[in-house]
Image 1 (spheres, rainbow, N blue to C red):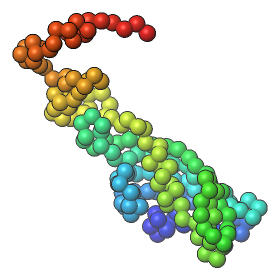
Image 2: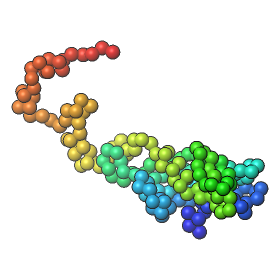
Image 3: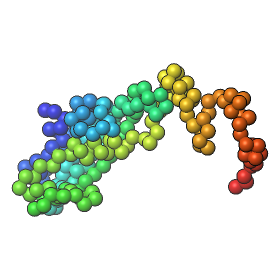
Length: 181
């Protein structure tokens, strides 16, 4: 059974017994989802779907690593991820979503958790993902330092003395001012 199939729950067949599954997500899962942010990874997911009155509750936890490009050197790196999520699912005539409440067709009754799990994993990625200190590609970091701009828009690469002399003396005096906050 593929990981995509393991993330599908037939709510009409569940009854009052909770359905609990452990699923291992690999590169195949991330590629088959079709999203571009994450295409490689190794993540373990624990899912539990249970009936709560006339609706259902889907809880899941995940923990693993993703292969992402480093923000500094662009080489692949392992990014640990973990998190959890929950959804309330109800059966209805018109499928749709309203926040964390999902309505699925009452005749079909199939809950596909693949996209919700993928979204949670993708949202758990830190905004900045970089190698540990000293692990970045040295050649690429040297190129980055050569061409990157400071916050004031000036290049950080060494400037020739001719470029320094071309600065208007009025602006040069302003560089010496300190603004107190």
